[in-house]
Length: 374
Ligand SMILES: Nc1ncnc2c1ncn2[C@@H]1O[C@H](COP(=O)(O)OP(=O)(O)OP(=O)(O)O)[C@@H](O)[C@H]1O
Image (cartoon, rainbow, N blue to C red; front, side, top):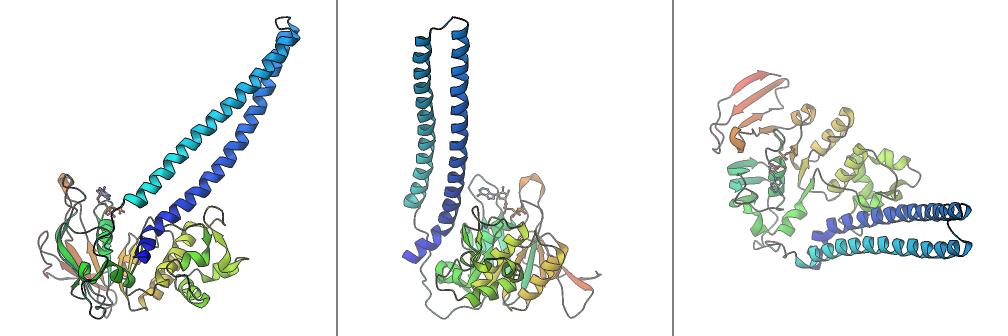
């Protein structure tokens, strides 16, 4: 149970650590600005008072009394501003504490099914989902099968529900209707802890936390061997760059560490996912910041791992290396269509794409094939 809590709040701790560092940086900056303004304020006050003395509007005694009270006034003003900042921080930490203490424990963590690990194939059975009862359905009666070892690309316009589908597949949100199965077993019966041990994902919002590169890659394990970390980094195509850094895998990243490019961050996050040696890998725009050559290298490496892959991408290079492409269309009237068109790319026939067109929204896909030259 302790392990579950640690895993659930890992992201929260990462976020809080990074926010802490940002808050400290801001506080240092603010402190220096405050001292500077205070100093300037004193000079201005003394200068004004001195001018008034010279114009005989102030006596020397009045000048001394004025300067004393002005200094007290400024220091109390400083105190008030600091108290206001502390009050804001108190609220922030109060919210964090409430997040941890009041979040209900996640359901379906422990397994009902006690058999051997299932085959890493995934199936959505009549899955329907919407965020609230007032929102439109994002998925309705969705059927989808991803076979063991298959690579599937899910494409579609922004906001059509691709990330929502990934969240459902990761068990982060639960379908309102239907079920998601791995190897024929409902993932809730399998237990989300056991299921997630077999699945790794790189989401669009994934972040590096303040710490070393090695810590960032081996987030899931405290006893990682350096060779395992290096192997994951090699697969993600980032080992050479890390090795070239003066501190290698001990280089600090995050707010206090070295600045990494978007592509380098993405590859470290990908290495973190590969470090788990998952049986299913889900990539949500995970290589969008990489150049085509690096992306191809990663696609080639990952495709040799014989793990089931679900990839959300916009780039044709990434999409076309998958065996199956599922496109989702946004409908008019603000609602969303279910997967509608499936492209099947038989690798045995290079240069040709076999297109299977699904019949009807929410139905199982039926074949009305066409050969296309690509
Ligand atoms: N937590 C949420 N609460 C309510 N609605 C949400 C939530 N998250 C997403 N949505 C809505 O669900 C719809 C699908 O969002 P989703 O992020 O799955 O789309 P997407 O296809 O992944 O988009 P993109 O390609 O831009 O990442 C959008 O209309 C979005 O506004």
